Image (cartoon, rainbow, N blue to C red; front, side, top):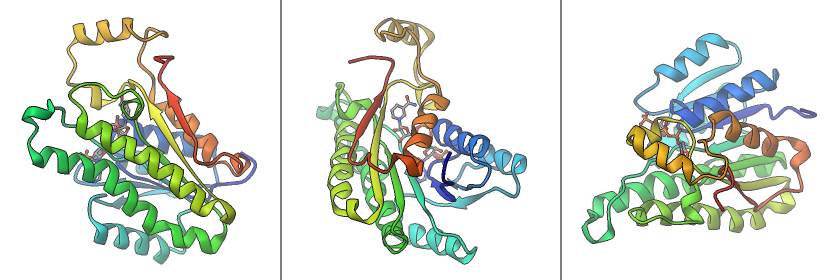
Length: 245
Ligand code: NDP
C-alpha cells in the first residue's frame, strides 16, 4: 500500500466478514491501527487483539445507538487517533414474507443495516472533512441489486445503503473523501449458518463459480478502496458474487 490508511474502524467485527476485514488490514498494512467494533459478542475480535496487541483494539459499539457512535468516536480521539476509514459492516437479516412480517422485524433490519450506516457516516464525516481525507466503505449486499423474496426489509435497507453511498459520495467528493458500497453475494460466514447442507449444495449450483465467497475476497476489495491510490473511485457499487449476474 502506497499510503497507510492509518486508522480504520470496522463495525460488526466479531462476525465473519468484519473479522476477515480486520485480519486482512493487519496482515497487509503494518502501519495501520484497527478498531474492531463489537456489540455483545467479542470473543473472535479479542483473539485478533491478542495476536496484534499494539496494532488494534476492540471498541464497544451498538451501531443502532447514536450515543454509542458518539462515545466510540470520542474514545478513538481520546487515544490521539482519527478514523480515516470507516467500514459500515455490521448487519443482519430477518427474513419473512411481507404479508406476515412483524413491524418489529422491518424496523430492526432497517435500523441495523441502513440507519446505522447513516449514523456511522455522520459520526466520522466532520473529522474526515477537517483532514481532507477519508474513506467510507459500506457493506451492502447483492440483495440490494437482485432482491429475493422474503427479504423486503433487508433488500430495502441494503438498496438504501447503495443510494446513500451515491448521494454522500457527491456531497464530499471535493474534500478527499470517497464513499463506496460493496455488494457481496454468498460469503462463507455464520450469516449462512441457517442453510442446510442440501440447500447450500443447490445454491452453489446456481453460482457461476460454483462456490461461496471467502471473507478475504471481500476484505481485499475493502483494502483496495481504502487505499489512497483509489482516490478517483467514489459512489461505486462493486458486486462480489462469483458472477451471479
Ligand atoms: P455475521 O452474522 O457473521 O456478522 C454480523 C456482525 O454484525 C456480528 O458481529 C454482529 O454482532 C454484528 N451486529 C449485528 N447487529 C449489530 C448492532 N446493532 N451493533 C453492532 N454490531 C451488530 O455476518 P457477516 O459477517 O456475514 O455480515 C457482515 C455484513 O455483510 C452484514 O452487513 C451483512 O448484511 C453483509 N453481507 C453478508 C453476506 C454473506 O453472505 N455473509 C452477503 C451479503 C452481505 P453480534 O455478534 O453481537 O450479533
